[in-house]
Length: 406
Ligand code: PLP
Image (cartoon, rainbow, N blue to C red; front, side, top):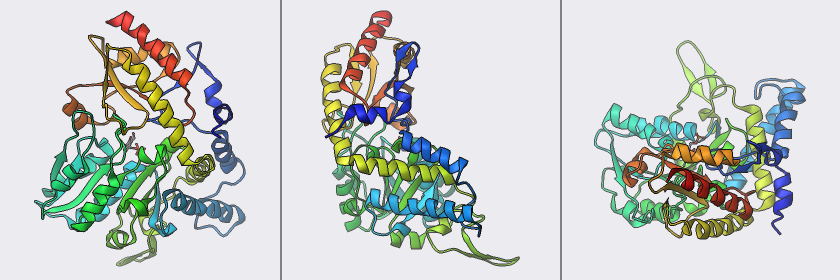
């Protein structure tokens, strides 16, 4: 049974007030709150178990290394990877995608080669590819979503040409909540020899993931959206792709030997992990993923789907509210504007007065904003601890904003 009261009590911040009202935290798409087990792990990590990893021969360094390295296996289990050595630990999705852009794509792609992107991508899955466009003439090919915000996998596959070298696509839109059938995209792309990078920043938060079942080549996650610390994350890389990769960041830890005239590298995945990592953050991410696996991602998904249905029915009743992305197959993420109302920032300020935290702006999705013909939206993004009563509080606050502004 999904015991929502117990789950809420696991997150200390949810019992605080904001502007004199109980906090209704609906900004999970930007970053999720942390359960006490994660906060305790971070505190313990610094208070009792801290030292640098991999290089010490003393007790604390060995302890920190053991705990840090164990997270690789936890992430592999969470993502359904075959081997924990396919997991590169990092600071989050932005670093993960840049590692692929610099380490895999840059050395391989020539002017005129093509990368296919959906119009829904987050800037973290756009700007690194723009670097390749600017620096070496790589062509970015964009696939639109339909009027409901859905992405047809066949439209992505139809964009493949003999020059296509990579498809980089999100599994779940951080703006519209649209789920993408990345498995169908991977199957079609694989048949034509095109690797696929999946941005799992949002997808991994809202449903179970199995990278082997998806069949992707790269799958990026970011710890702070998975109820873990900021500055933690990972990227799954299929073994064959990892073998093709050049290191991106150079420095300590990723080398075997360094001399004046020669350098040799550590074996993957260490080859792609330069410098002192986010030790305690990564240990905290491991605890967060164990927490999620204990709850069961299937149960989290079912809870959030119920919330989505309830929120959709309540928001549909507001005929002055424009919800972007009406596809049925979406997560509990709602972006909206109010007819004739002030800027999204003004709406979010009213909601904040009622204790309701939402995000307003372009959500790091410029091409999608252009496609939708808006400059900004408000976004309410639900997480595993939200409730139907919080949907009601959101709707009450929106009604107030409508009265004030429209
Ligand atoms: N991709 C998606 C879909 C996101 O929602 C985000 C964060 O908002 C990112 C990538 C970037 O994540 P990070 O800033 O943690 O690297």
